[in-house]
Length: 298
Image (cartoon, rainbow, N blue to C red; front, side, top):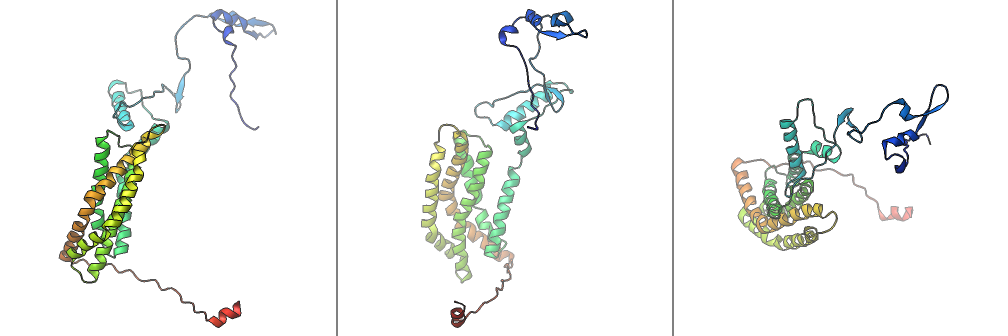
């Protein structure tokens, strides 16, 4: 089938147990006669590897390590690198393969991912509010939710693995949604001439019920992942626990601080006298069709 297959041929176990069984294997000589393999050399028992493993064309020894309870795979990889650097000679190197290679290649990018998340949230809010400083009232509430997520997994002894990081990105969007609901209504009232303090308090009172309902529904939806069991439960624990405790902090603490952040940002805006962003409005073509033309077309 236009493919190459690697085939290994060996005798049954009963014909290759002792070294004398090599007499059962024959090879053809130049004269055409068959002689046993024992006629070509001597045999002796010795020790050695059953197979020689090579990695990137170098003779290698594969090694699999399981992290200790309460330790992440990244910490285990760092410990192995320290041991190799301290105890092995310079002509012996260390290389990762498989999932460990992918983990090492992708490590250290959590800060970049979170920075991009905050940047995109800021740019979208700046376009929505037409202001460079008002979105800060939303962004300042996000560390509160992140703090709750870290405290939650720390209290339960979970690792800050890649699943927790995925849940952290999701948590940023959910926490920002609650802050956006308050800031949006408060900004509308301020634009109409209301005092920032009164507008923030009124917006918080007005949006408290819908924020509480949607957030509690999501928190209860995360509860099965927090108490999950069976195959794959470790990833569910990391994702669900971070989002679960993060949303609880966002509801209890973050929603109280959002009006405060809004007032603080508006006072800073007035002090710095920052101009508003004005985006050009798009002019769409107008199409007028009379009823007579519609009837003719029909």
